[in-house]
Image: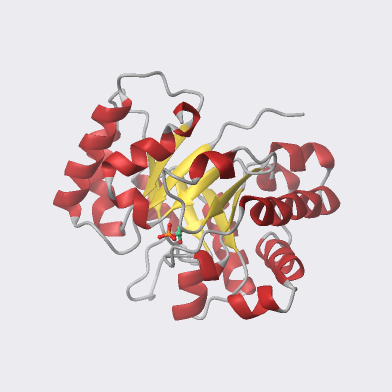
Length: 258
Ligand SMILES: O=C(CO)COP(=O)(O)O
């Protein structure tokens, strides 16, 4: 089986202004500098207004922290007031961009078609998309969570060549577990992440499926991360609230020490 480097990413959502962002990244860098963490990749997904500040801190330095945005426009430029394009994010050397987060799907009516267009925009400009998928509570209660999530995976990756899909990161984030403190049981998360890998094998190949990193997201904390990361098909975490506390996020990144 392919070895997949875990990706521990903090999604700051709409938190931290650019000055707070600088202080936060400096703390993370300091705390993570005393050990060799090459075995784990660390990233922060910052608000657009923070990206330039984060870049100046991380760029050219030995900091191992990668960074990216929380959304991307499907368009390259033009009359799209309020949007941020792939070329703009690429110019800031963003490595990652979250696409189709449930908060975008819910509050900004993003459909699988829009998400798919954004995934393609990310690849077009050299960014790695973190494709977010996951079911609402009623879908889980009806027992349709796997089917629902796999349809989002298929929709998000539609018409994508294997050369692109092989580097995608998929974040399984059950909506009912986001910001609620209700973490999805590790076995339940594993069930869906394994099904996502199966879907990738069906859409592309087993080899590609074995290569793709699948994260879990939803109320991840230092106290539950080790159990989640012990599951064979979970290759990282997308952390919301707990990523705003530098001590807590560092503990999450160091899940192997627990
Ligand atoms: O939405 C999330 C990350 O993208 C998860 O958020 P919480 O960790 O706050 O539940």
